[in-house]
Length: 467
Image 1 (cartoon, rainbow, N blue to C red):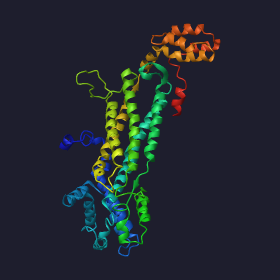
Image 2: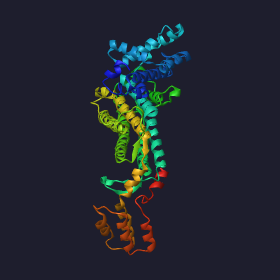
Image 3: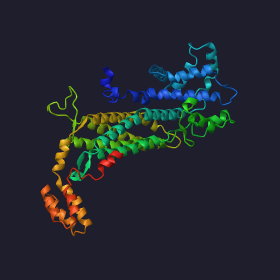
Image 4: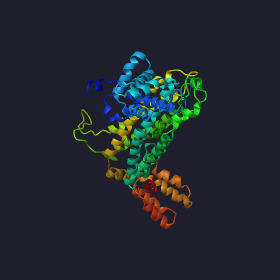
């Protein structure tokens, strides 16, 4: 524990910091600087292969040195860039100056220093800051999505699938509008959420991450002024879309833009994440309620305290923490998706400070996913409570009885069952007495007499097992 952890303004960097380290490395300012260096290096190396007489292709040694700057980029390198920024008061220019300094390091051979020094002015050549920033943001989001968010959602999907299979046959009383309703199974309710989360995950994964490197207002003005014979749109497409193994960035080119990439893909991504979170809020609240009903117990943790005054308490804190963090995340995600696609004329700076909060939004997502998974792993089914609840709800069999009556043309079937059951406590004997009087085939009577709230589950078990 250090002083910063208790003085941090954000709980993501304080109380919860240890849970979010992978995301911190990707979405922090350090992560942003790392991606900026990656973009600058990719652009610089590609320019050496563009065919300009003034910039010959870089040697293999030079390429290896530049690649190592990206691969070995550390927090100390970020601090060094921040120190340069104290003078420049411009963060992207500080990255450029740091990169130029690394190309003149005393640790390099004189030949390598000479080669890179002669090409120094091609670092950040023809780029506006936003060419570097928007590609860096896309790379950050790509890494966060693939390395943190989707794996966390996949873990939830796997757990929900396990629960759907494990509890496929465990009958449970439904509670539409909070009232007793046709029975389901615990597994089928988990399967319902499983399918929703799987669909939501597909929407997150399907969002195409875009980037542009077309200059100050999107027209390649400086590029053409420097070298009109290069097909700059095709060149930038190669840099943006080539896989990282081939020296590219592995993104998709945004062909038309102003100074900034329009951020429409970001809005789409954040909306997709927010929709996923809404499904998980629904799950968190339902599980909270099932714990309150006694359908689930929670495994105990040695030394853990549920209440400062009530020693018996085992609170559903994981689901409450998940719900709270999902709500904070969605508030931020929705602001991001509403604000970012809007920019006055060819560029205003209002998106810049907002974009710095992407990691905050995703941090609350990650924290919520961890809490929810932890809560799911602590659940222990209380089949006795489920069975007892069902045995007190014979009124739910009014539905199948009146449906069979209607099949055989019994007049006023619905109304008869309504008069018998609505708002009243109904027993097994009440229903069986009615069934014996019905003008329906004897085999149908026997089928209805065999029904109980626990076995009136339709295809719930089969559906749960297929999910």
